[in-house]
Length: 460
Image 1: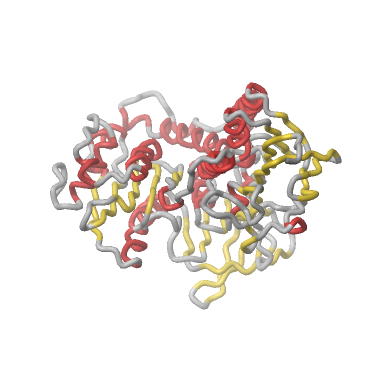
Image 2: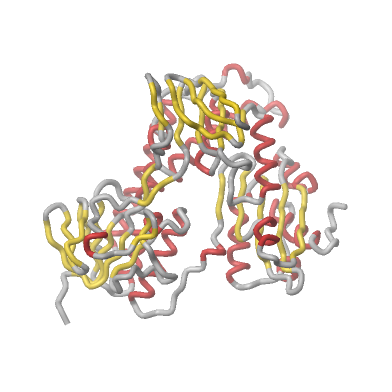
């Protein structure tokens, strides 16, 4: 057997890569991780964490403005404002703390850290900033980049942002047009609306948030519209000309003017400079092709996270990293992509897992649907926001939980219960008979499952 410098080499230090590296080290492997930019990847540096830090401030601002409705006097909403300078400083502090934590964990687990871009020489060798490194097993975790579509023309003088630039703004624009109604576009629409921008969202499809049940995403859209966000659905954007977005809708040419334009049409796997094709790694469109153990077509090389294009979420990448390491260590491990929770940080929040009602019916499944309105939940009333509902999709014969879609306060913290339940193949009946504490928003879950059988207690 050939002698390699490392048992496992990980390319990329994001939530997939650093988790894989640490797990491999804990399994007794000699591990190296190469990162060309920032440890923590997109999630920590220009994604989940900075976005949610800004949204926290937007939510706090809204709470202060609504203080009078909670019996608080002496607050003049007209005098309340956000210092973008101080907010950006806080965001940087949060990011730096977490990035420092990642580096500390890697050091503490004796992972060799190399800074620089990695490029494959062959299936057991990479070049990291001019230094050759050999390994027995490789894990590609290079993430994704913002997709800037070539079919949208740019003409004249305009200010086009991606999520990266939008997170670093030093002044809130008076108006912003957002191209894309997925999670990134909708979260930024919510954020900028709360900070005081006039927000317009242009989406090609007829519904926002495609992974969410249409009934739930429809409620969120209605709430955003009530708060002042304008939506153009079925809008085919053709160009950004000066300070206007030109689009076609229902066969008619239309336009919307805005101080800046946010491109939020998705992300694309990042394989630039990796030399993956040259050593024979198979691709599926722009993504590296993997099986359910995260192996590529080259037996000793694995690919996790956004780069395999399966489910572009940080927690998916982390779990794929653990599955890949288990596979490398000869353990039985498989990825199940039908039970991955997704969270959207509006206020109220959205959280979902599994099938939508439409998907279940399209598959020909016999289902029961249960719904419980947050207006009937005591804690939601206490919180001062009763918009939303819990919606569950249940197999009609066996009571298997097929999907759960939540819209309400604290729902991103509640969805983990369903992730555990579904991974254990729990039934609706088991959720109903698990005692949920009062008063909590989580009480809406057993109620929704009871509603699937026409037996909800707290609503008709």
